[in-house]
Image 1: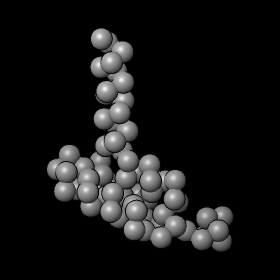
Image 2: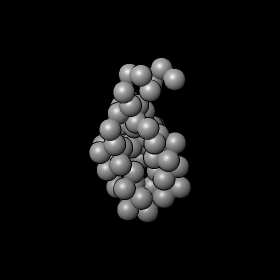
Image 3: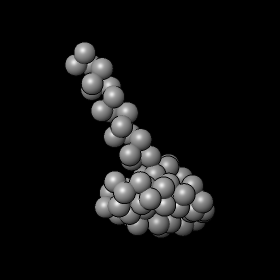
Image 4: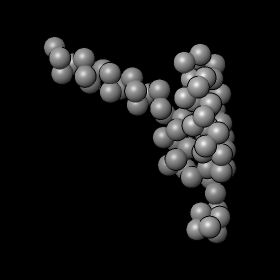
Amino acid sequence: MEITVLIIFFLIVVFYLLPIIISATRSTEHQGMIFFINILFGWTVLGWIAALIWAIVEKPLTLKKRSL
């Protein structure tokens, strides 16, 4: 029973941080703002949806900008 609770808790945390994970994986330009919006306003669901859409729609940095 305890392991089930831990797994469910882990999945909830990963789901809550999904916009941040997507933004970091795609190396978007506004990672910091997406992180900020998700952490502060993600609990409102509307803030979480906004951060998720922003992370998905945001264009990834080009290879030149990543190296700077």
